[in-house]
Image 1 (cartoon, rainbow, N blue to C red):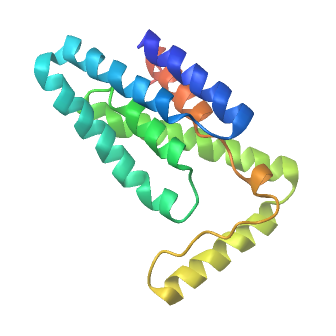
Image 2 (image 1 turned 60 degrees about the vertical axis):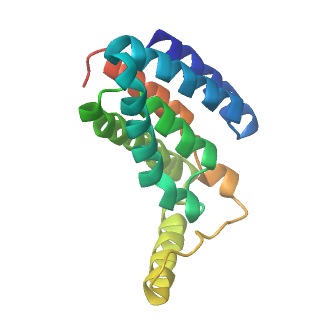
Length: 166
C-alpha cells in the first residue's frame, strides 16, 4: 500500500498542476495493483483486482459520460479500489467521493456561488428528466473553479483507511 500512496501522490501532482492524470501512471498503478493482489491472494488476485477496479470504473462511468468527472478520475479511483478486498472497495470509493463532496461544498461556500451552482444543477436535472436520458452537464465559464481534482480525495481516503479511521 505504500507504493499506492506514492503513486497517488504523483497523480495528485499531475492532476493539480495540469488537470490531467497521465494514462501511464494509471497503468503503473494497475500493474502494481496486480502484483500486490498476487502477493496477497495468489494467482487469483489478478481476477479479484480486475473485478474491483472495473466495477468501480463502470459505476462511475455515467459521471464521466455527462462530463461531471474526468476520465482520469474514473480510471484512478477504479485502479486504486482494486487494491482493496472486495468487501472494502465500496467503502473506499464512498469515502473518496464523500471527501470530494465536502471539498466541493467548501469551494461553493468560499466562492459564494452555491445558489448559482444549485440553479445549474436543478436546471440540468430538469432537462435530463424531460429528455428521459442522461444529458451532458452544462459547462460554464467558471468550470475550472467549479470542479475539483478527485486524486486528492482518493489519496486522503487511502490514508484514512491505512490510519484505521475506517
